[in-house]
Length: 123
Length: 112
Image 1 (cartoon, rainbow over the protein chains, first blue to last red):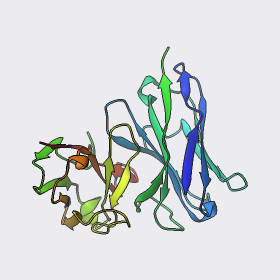
Image 2: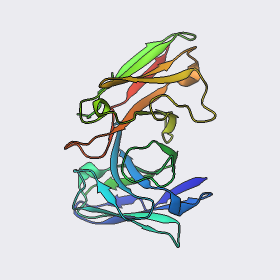
Image 3: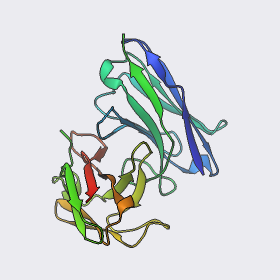
Image 4: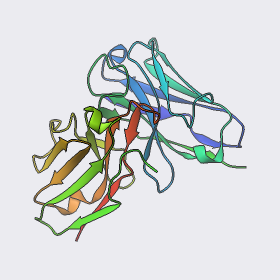
């Protein structure tokens, strides 16, 4: 059971970046997936989540209108498209899977986490 | 300013028992939403320690326990060991303006 993030890097303010989260070892279409970020030296901040079937998507106020989450069941991958990036978006971005199957909403614990990918927004 | 409030730091000697509090409001913990706890060792991803207030995933020692009452929850660690030194976070759901998934600000546990 594994999640692997990719796509991080250094980007200028106002530009875009797309992160990927590739899942393996479990039935991808049964589980909701979230993105959680951690700014340098700071705590965890939930960013966005998508229900197991992709029907419902949820966003933190800090990224609403700028970030878009999506999932592709044919590739067992969740994406986060990040537009209009700001310096305060600089963080390690983790993807994480709900503990129970068929999750929808942010009620549940996250039992599988990726290793994280670093996003640095700087001019 | 996190929606869930945790003490920034706690400490204890090996073998002792420590507790970490997580205080919420009537729109999250007080609304009977479950609380989950994570351990984050330096340089690693978080790991779930307690889910649904007081349940341990397989592989988590029974030295770790969780409880919830009213608008607060607590994580207790007994028989403290050096490897327990880490950051600990609580998580719940918020039905108010804060959004959906909310985390506490985190607590740094130091084993003396």
